Image (cartoon, rainbow, N blue to C red; front, side, top):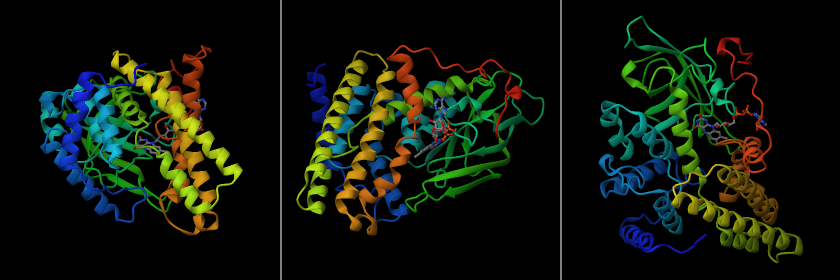
Length: 400
Ligand SMILES: Cc1cc2nc3c(=O)[nH]c(=O)nc-3n(C[C@H](O)[C@H](O)[C@H](O)COP(=O)(O)OP(=O)(O)OC[C@H]3O[C@@H](n4cnc5c(N)ncnc54)[C@H](O)[C@@H]3O)c2cc1C
């Protein structure tokens, strides 16, 4: 493992710093815990993404022909580090730029790429992810939302009925990446098709979900006879699971980094400021957290080293995700205990992190699913049996 930048990485870092020093905003609103209204924060993020787009920094890893910089995951990580050093991490456009865009580039027709990539990269059009359903989360291949052809023609429209859940940002999204079941007579992984859905299509109802924080960032999305043209299908009919893998791999890469996640110094200062003298118990917990964070940074370095050799990390990403959830939960708990009763009475960054922390253990794959991956790939335990894998979807027992 080599922690130093190679000469080409150092040159990239210098170029990125020069750009950011000249153009980065002093502050980019935090959609999750900022005092600014969600609309103001969204406008700030849009404007910053437009600046990045105008100067060719909109997407580090996208090919240059599509407006990206044509660089690899290591440069992406360097870029993330420099953004977070300036306190401007956490793009609201992760689903579009980090997931939908790369999937379109890999599987889209020339028409689809020409129509969508440019407004997606400039944040003129915002995207959401319409994958999870009440009966399909960890077992995503169990999606039951139906898409059926309206007629016999090969390019007939599709009519969609069903429900999605947890759809982040669907209430302000212009487009959604949607997976739906187009064949119930084959095993679950084979009967799925992937669509690019215009969120203004009649028949779509977006219902925001109120979270413990009091905010609404997620939604239930209902489809009643929603008509999608066949030209909005991404990939082959029944080939949606393969396309989905491209999206999920990019989601893991986009979520994986540790930069910008937690500033230990800020946490320590918060604890010191609110708890007065840090007693032995708090000191002990802070030190333990510091150790976990350092171990996570080393694991991240291992992941970066693998990426640099062209290897996609699998089990490491799962262990990282587990540890990130654990650290964020512990940090928020520690901060609120240090703040005492005042911590409960006020609104603020750590209060919000505390209420949001259960989500870290669920989003992007639950703790139990990450442990399954680690058990199989690190410990070499047998693969979890899935008796439903080979059965036709219509024969599966489903709760919804
Ligand atoms: C903050 C946040 C944002 C999200 N954003 C989006 C989004 O924009 N779009 C989208 O499509 N989805 C989104 N999701 C959904 C997310 O991907 C799912 O919540 C997640 O995959 C878990 O699925 P589930 O909620 O259906 O839980 P389930 O899969 O029903 O799991 C319930 C419980 O059973 C456990 N479990 C399930 N299967 C196994 C197993 N095989 N072995 C052991 N334990 C198991 C789980 O660990 C969990 O504890 C988001 C979720 C969160 C929290």
